[in-house]
Image (cartoon, rainbow, N blue to C red):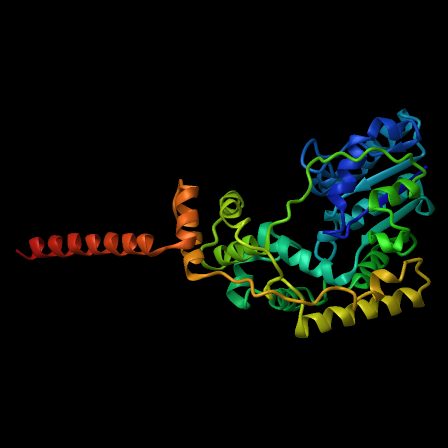
Length: 371
């Protein structure tokens, strides 16, 4: 029985693959392929993230249950999938523990680690956008905005300063896996259609596991926010924060999603940041060629083809006022927020009037107390 541990990378179609394998579970069972229900999320993207919530003492029992499920269905291939295997790799031992138990139950020669990668440049931009939307790589949101300029280059610097390596150099993660699983195969798969005869990553995985291609539905996928929405969310994160930001970001997107898109310098690679990521890609290419990894080269070498043109996308003072209103009001009116984003003077005057009223009340109270 063969086991494939899909570990990401993050922002490399993991959620698409997880939903696909869950939706086609019964069809794939008939082909001897199991995407286990045991320790798989019941909703969301249907990953095997629940494995990460186990204590090390409970992992062996979980792997035994997964094996029993596959055996009961007559399957000889198992896929486990979760980005958390990578997200917790450098400061937690749960990934090493899971791999150790898989090796124990299935044999080290039958357990492969699978990493899906993409062109480094859009990968980095996507990671930072996801960080602003909802967090990424467990980078501390509050500290990041306090200790950096809050832009993409700042995110790269902050991550390296706190973790000692660059998240955009894939070979760093391969080295981590080889350090905790030296005898297991690490397979790299490109999600770039140019590397796969025009096929998308779902069809590539079907070929990998000898599965029939299935109709891909339009189920839940990660939302793409416009650059203007991302700028508004970044401004909200920097100046207001709050644990309930995830709920409030929906309001922000409603107001800003149609207010213009493009490529903002805050979320796009250019200058020093572009140079660093390009160097990281070339480092990966050299490393994987040296170690005979079967990885299509375009994912690393097609850097010049990535568009570098940037648009003048920014937030106006009125739009900043609208973000303030959306973040501070408990039940903001979306239409009013739209208005504020175009013309904020009434809102500003309202704030001034409220403060003047409070000052008058305070002065009157102090005067009465002095009497």
